[in-house]
Length: 342
Image 1 (tube, one colour):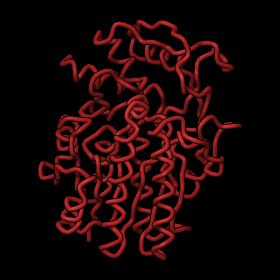
Image 2 (cartoon, rainbow, N blue to C red; image 1 turned 30 degrees about the vertical axis):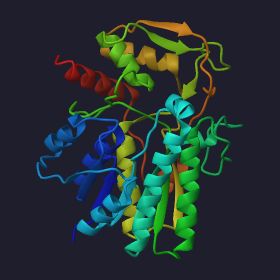
Image 3 (tube, rainbow, N blue to C red; image 1 turned 90 degrees about the horizontal axis):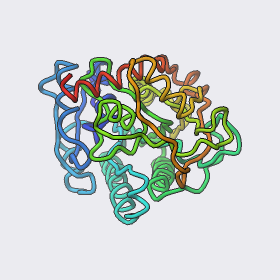
Image 4 (tube, one colour; image 1 turned 90 degrees about the vertical axis):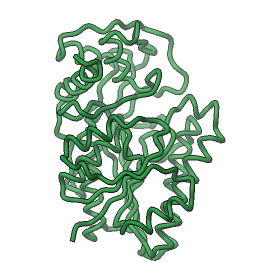
């Protein structure tokens, strides 16, 4: 019998790619989203890629406890992947209460409902932001978490703790996995789904592609005087399809009862640091386009360098990032050109 996975926030950038990979791995998927930070573009793209015109979509807000309960009542949910959250760092600093209200309440509603129905597998979309400015790199899952630099980051840390405590209180009836993402970039090779920010992008790659296509006048590179080989910050950029595949491995691990603990943590990264300048240069080279950029002052809150040690995910889950940065940046540009109608 096919297992059913609920993807909350499943119409967004990461959620849409995860939905594709789950369907292609043989899972039934229910997508739920309130479209507060996306439109239907990627959801429609998912249907085209998978051929699933009947893909269930529930338009709802996970802060509405009754709506969450109705969802779990209508569908037999074997696992939940929770993406439904606000995610703009700067906005979270300006509107902390909005972030705490949305990000914490939505997740607690999922856990409470899963608990009420007698248990479930819950995969939480966490972030490398929980490591703050690490003392050493690369970071492992045992690297100490540090105080968050923003309310957004703090909600990730708090949700990790909420999941751990809830799993512990349920004596094995409810299982959890925390996936700590590094920097997801790129788009699906079909160019039918990708990152589609509303307004000015918060992330680097859509700002690069929008500048290259002429939507943005100039790309600001914030600081070139960091203690790195070229002076720009270093990050672990992971292809969105590789990241999406990690969710399939994690869900399968939960459903097939292969977890070694009731709540597990995995870093999802490549293990390869790449600087901002290296990324821009690679984009220009692989796509044969120029990006108008300038060096701007450092941005508050940016850390110098962080990248993953993905050994645990590689060995325990059997997952590994395989796509090259060239493939990733080609896909990102193809998606931008698709959006531009080129």
